[in-house]
Length: 214
Figure: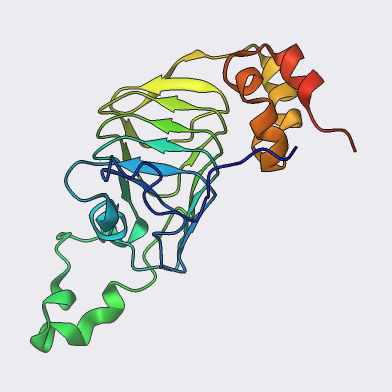
């Protein structure tokens, strides 16, 4: 019997909780890529995620978010468009104000960037976490509430603070490698559904044993 699985294309997975949205059916920008079942929770307006939570996104850098990520209220992604010149006396972006100043727009083009911002699979970002441009947050990572992520966070790390630092690892190094190899987030969703208890509360060994066979 094929299990009934939640629809990843539904905007509000819990109709009684409109504060929760799945991001994949919400996002329209070609510069944002989101995997299935990743969600954002906000009692004010979760559907404004692209404009309220992804800031200064003028391209071409992308925001890439994996599957099964959980983002608490107030999570913000600051993109490379927030960059200003720092090699002269003033950092003020005069040309964007228009008028005769716009003739000098070349002074704002080609500013150095840090590339795409990448959030792995099964990442939990706590309340009001801010993610700065060009960082990578690894699979299975947890970032504490109020943190400012300015550099990469390893897979299965717990990080927090401003700037965010690794507090501890969720698993030993060899276990992290095994978890990345089993990659449960890539399992067929019906198979995943049958083994949810193992994914949520099992050991690494149990997860490996539950993995689909080729």
